[in-house]
Image 1 (cartoon, rainbow, N blue to C red):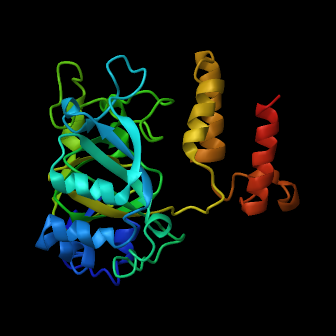
Image 2 (image 1 turned 90 degrees about the horizontal axis):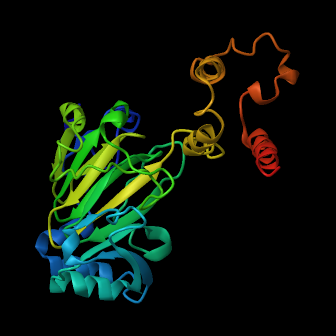
Length: 327
């Protein structure tokens, strides 16, 4: 199931879109004009993109040659080894074609907002619960540390080769995750360099590698990455780009569980062990093992937050929580 070459971009089957395992789809978007231009040359690819907003001003990451393309923390973890820069899209394309020695990374830029018209002819008609967020990622030979995303994801490589190293969610303890409150792009990242792992400093990473899946994608290939799978990405060529589609299986009113984790650090982690065990039992009962019997003994009209959540009840609960946190 990890690799398929029989999937049509016009009808990606439900067993792929709802899979709990990664799925590599060879040649899924090889017909896109973006991919066809990239296969001709880097110049044709950049000229094709230039037609969708060369003067558009965008924010990107820029690192010096000394970082070796690896966007990461600085030495004392007070910040990062790159800086944010703003320039025109056309200038970025020119610099990539000129073969700059800097590491350049335009990450997660929403196509419908920044590049009107680009999605026409370069799209996937996905049958998913919520409208996907479609983004362009563009740069040169760069490396992004393993991290997870809450949405499901289809990453479509459109220029250059990319290597994805994936780990299942249960490998978190072996990935040596960095700070939760200072992150490059909002998600916690692994501190291990996937290109040159230091097993002396990070010995448990060897166990993570036993569960790792490594895929190398060419232009036209696509990879389905399930929610919360850790993935590190290496762009292997001087001009490298992908288009990705993010969507959630859950309703839009649901908040990110990462907020729950941060609040649990505030309210649960440092309790005495017996109290943590008691709260673990409550979480198991009301959250992780919850089913239709959990609140069946309460009249439906009186179930409150134990009733099935909807947009209105989620809004009310969010208001209650905000009031409590602001006291």
